[in-house]
Image (tube, rainbow, N blue to C red):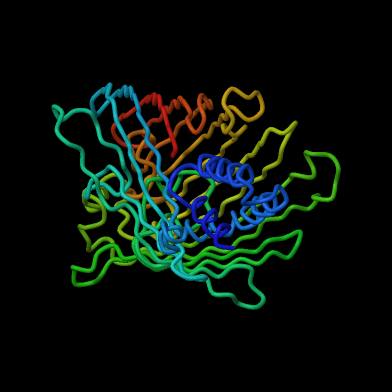
Length: 415
């Protein structure tokens, strides 16, 4: 037994597993050669070492990497962009290069509690952009805290999911496009998310309270409530188009409080109110969204409709709509079915329909009071890397003539 213990200890010495195993084999062969062990005894020792190898490796891994460290998962992405912007009317033409870096992690603190954070390029004066331009004579780029949150998911009978999230978080709503919310927007506050799978139908609800400004006489805030359902009526069918057919629909209500008294949301909402031609000073937005998705020959296809209506803006310039189509999913390099994706949308966003500070920053220079189109295609070129091209063309609906065409060429790598 002393010999067996010594050999097991030898197999646990630092170095590669194959090297340690080779040394054990050499030693066993020498012991057999000198008559200290028989071939049968050496075979039994090899078997015992093999059977305990997995257990010993797990114990060694625990000593090297504690549970608290193994519970964390890191992820990030890096995007290089070349952007050409041509304007007719107000504003300047630009040809610029930009970079976006995002690095984050999430960790399981306990069975029901998760912590997450992300840092990113960006600034503290623009909530809807994490880009940095190459226009500062090689000065260093700013890194900011983009997200930091705790999420508690207790087990509740009758609910598939109950998630309580607090901190700085990603968008807590189900959405189909960037009509109302820019994709780079992070949300400060608390959210509750519920879902229940009833088989053919999945019901979900999202709600939250988010702080915009607490330093004025009346604090500015945003309250959101959304309810929706996802229906997959033909999942037992053999035909792929019907089997994968899924309709998702939701109605959201966004209630802004005291934004007219605040100058802290993003840059200065009072300045951007100038783009609201009727001078909207309040936003209570109804936002129904619909998506119909399926697959054709393994290719994901989807069409969607997003609509917003500001009930506090009277009867003029208070509606917005976006209609889009999506094809494919760029996940496998140079694959005909999995190596590309493309899309298109038409948008009309009237001046008083939505809160300017948080809508898509790329379309017609950002803000509301616009109409136009967007086209894009993305190719999976390397593992975890894509190359994409997006063309946006928009114009003002009312007021000064302002027409913009924008081409974005993106190289994105995820890690």
